[in-house]
Image (tube, rainbow, N blue to C red):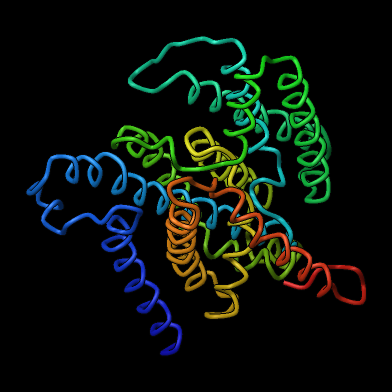
Length: 333
């Protein structure tokens, strides 16, 4: 208990340091006085319109993706599960690609059209997977995973088709967007768009901490202890999918955060979701903000999409999990 408290305290301290320090990390040095809107106007504009909103968005996106991965790994009892497994990212990406291809310049309620199309694509993926699993007797984790993979492949194929039919400029924009990144975050408008969705999803995951602890031990045991299995799965599935869909709508598909972070935190604080959930939220925010800071400085003045960097980190980790599979073929959590 004491060790877990120390770990959570250290993670909270690192999160505060990252939130305060990373906005000043970049190709150009920004004086501390710019934080109080003092000094050169260009420095103030860079800090308040670009770096600070971007770091906050990285915190929100990292926390949301990590919490989604944690919840899905508990529900599916599979360490390879994460929000992207269920096709939500591919659905959101498809919606954004359709918007780019059709060249529909509009906004509604101060939210850009690409965000609305991405939301629609994410909701379409949720509806398809939810409908496919509800058409059978109850919810099956295997059915959910297979349905999610199938929907993801279908949407990815449609993205490739649209990219093939697009002209050179549109094809490049589509390619750049599906790489995932935070370079489109300018000002706090996108942050305010994603914040309520991430907050709702996080609250629901925290609320289901007891149920997740029982589900990780097995569905039969969870049912015997009074867990409403279908209801719990439905809440987790819809809430996390909407949360991830909101993140993808702004940042593009950023993979492997929901896969890597829960495992790192499980090694640090153990499998109890009372401690694991806050640790995952903090660690996800720290990891993605650090990756984004590295992505925008490692190739300066050019910028590497953060989705590429997280995939480079997550790919070997994914292979390591496969190697750790138990003798029965089931991956070990």
